[in-house]
Amino acid sequence: MSQFDAALMWFRRDLRSEDNAALFAALKDSRRVYCVFVYDTEILDALPTRKDRRVEFIWQSVTELGHALEKAGGQLITLHGAARKEIPRLAATLGVQAVYANHDYEPAALERDRAVALALKDSGIAFLTRKDQVIFEKDEVLTLGGTPFSVFTPYKNAWLKKMEPFFVKAYPVESFAAHLAKAPAHQSMLTLSDIGFEPANLQALGISGGAAAGKKLLDDFLPRMVRYRDSRDFPAKKGPSYLSVHLRFGTVSIRALARAAWPGVGGQSGEGPATWLSELVWRDFYFMILHHHPHVVSRAFKPAYDAIQWPNDESLFAAWRDGRTGYPIVDAAMRQLNQTGYMHNRLRMIAASFLVKDLHVDWRWGEKYFADQLNDFDLAANNGGWQWAASTGCDAQPYFRIFNPVSQSERFDAEGAFIRRYVPELAGCDKRRIHSPWTMTPLEQQGAGVIIGKDYPAPVVEHAAARLQALEMFKAVKG
Ligand SMILES: Cc1cc2nc3c(=O)[nH]c(=O)nc-3n(C[C@H](O)[C@H](O)[C@H](O)COP(=O)(O)OP(=O)(O)OC[C@H]3O[C@@H](n4cnc5c(N)ncnc54)[C@H](O)[C@@H]3O)c2cc1C
Image (tube, rainbow, N blue to C red):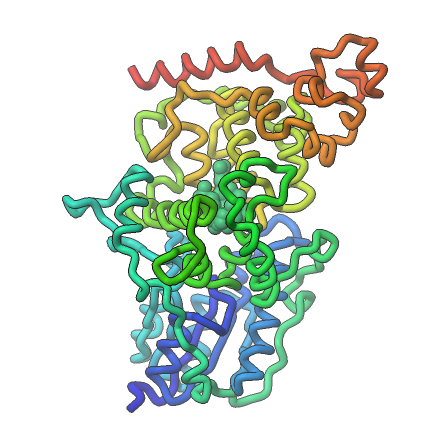
């Protein structure tokens, strides 16, 4: 027998109708389930532009979700307003006894959820949440002493040890689809212009929101997974899955991805799949770090590093941001980010390290810029990645290991193919000089069709000197 006569499923970062933990629970527990998505003005109004790739992606995904729910006999109510007010109001209007949602781990979302839960409680409505975004959350993977891990490798080993088929099993939402309900008054779904936004350039980039597009990317990646370990570090190659934006908005299920790469349930085996699974574990790891150490949102994981005096030269930051540092691999990376909203993982590490260790700009400036630009922006992973690169985080790369932007470029873009794609000024350089074009003689520059300092910038800093200065800055606070 159903526990509730009517419930409301509130979709947020889980924009799919299949294998959705909270939707499954709502349908199983209730006779009638209404569904809602709120375009939250508290988030949208703060965005600097009305042409945001993420908003377009969300809108496409919500629209597709609405069609899927309709096909299954339900309906998606879409609202534009402050979720903390809209959800309690809608729940009361519909007369539901419970609102279901999946866990969020970001401090602002948690604060919103607390406000919603409180308002619902005042009306005698339960707020029930489920784990959906990760395989393991919060306290599920702990050290033998019962404390949270702060280093990745032992966390990963404990994560793998804890894995069981149960944790990657899909929630059979379809078994209870008959409980989906239509909204009492017919409502058409909101359009992008209804919420005050315009299309960005997703279509031109070949990016589509929605679960069908997520599945297509996964299907494309599955035969490539076996080569992942060997191809993932080379930005000119089609090595990674490009699924991050779908994971961010829940248009793919993390359980489906883990199933594909975990031999325990018949997933692929070997070094490629194991390496990819490890990346999914990194994702869980950073969610867990954010849960246990919310101070990382504004401060260093390791407090000593909060004392670093960052020179924060605005013109150096602007050169980095705009892709004109004179270091081709850094500039190509930043231009990829600015043009597409994506940056390859190896390049995220190089660009982040360069901003902090070569330009001596506070990692939080870079973190904020990535947050504004990345399609897949995720607070936990972005913060973790930045603190890793800045050597301020848990499991940080030690401060004395500083990426050399030229040797990284020679190693991971040996032919200069990626640089040529995003820094066309350097297309005429040969593969030896393209990584450090300032070393070309005037005659070579002429031959390559690029005059350094005129057509392409000279390096804004000298790496060797900048490196020594960074070491001093870090040593000063390490004591
Ligand atoms: C400075 C910096 C900032 C980053 N910011 C973000 C961010 O805002 N959002 C984000 O999703 N990832 C972030 N990453 C991690 C990583 O770069 C991206 O997840 C990855 O490049 C996305 O491409 P993909 O989906 O093709 O990855 P794949 O290589 O196919 O990996 C599969 C999935 O594993 C997860 N993953 C992979 N690497 C990491 C990692 N290091 N940490 C956490 N999860 C990982 C992602 O969800 C990714 O989609 C950041 C890394 C760095 C160094």
